[in-house]
Image (cartoon, rainbow, N blue to C red):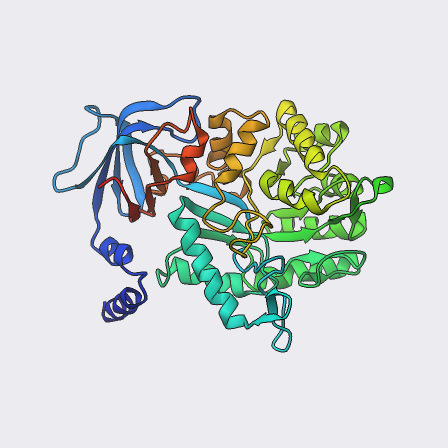
Length: 426
């Protein structure tokens, strides 16, 4: 208790401690919701009550049918719409500008702009800020697709221990690439056996899943714009070893050969898909492969490309949607606020509007960031929906996101693990 008190005073001193301290004595909380989307259904339910004990939902249903425990703290969200906490499927907490935050060793600092060095401690502080921004914007869980080191493990653990506020994290530690292409902050794999070894190394270092940079996006129509970074045998070995160890594999495979090879290798998810042909989509559906697209950042990056990258992304998304691919929400947020490289941390919800513009219904888009996203990261049993027994991750907005999905850009209430981190409904 003395340690908790000391931590509490420290957190208050840096402006992080209010909700954390309040949660220490929180026992039973009841939320009264004007409208509720449970994360799975095709409609909103009106006049609902959610009972929370500790970090879990213990009951949910129509007002009048749910017993309110004596002495419970009651939160009035009757003027809003309540949803499950949002899940960001492709995130980089340590990303600084266009460089991964951990794209350095002790002598080679990362840079946010050319000639402006930032040390590893500074980038770690920035990652803490990013984590808080994501949480306050309604993303209670994120999947970090590599920081180039084990710094993401430390951030995840610090959040889990209550030292700093942030979303629940699934981390990949050091991603892997082949020798043909890929950023230098991914570990180089040059044989199937080295791939297997690196899976074991990353899991020992604390990884929750394995990240493979399977293909680099290039302006080369002869190979379908997706230059594979490794051989099929290398990628198959990585996936097989990860699955033997009981973890999932996320493969960044933008287009062409890289996409087809990653599906064949058995990757659980294809990341940042730009161009995928109908036959590959058919195979992905057959195998149950998840996909992320990051449409917003693709639109922005397309301005500096010499091929129709945005149009390819739109067409691929629409083909995948029509075919029944399991599409997971992803914004791939950049860490350079104000730079036109993509949505910044805390602004990821702008992705919903593009998903709807390209053909999803608002509730389909929301499911991509709730129940579908939870399945993708292997946590469907604990998050992604408002159900009895699930973790109490809940967000609230003023309007009706089933009619206007941009409401999710204006989140006013955030609860994670039964702790309130934001409430503008008071």
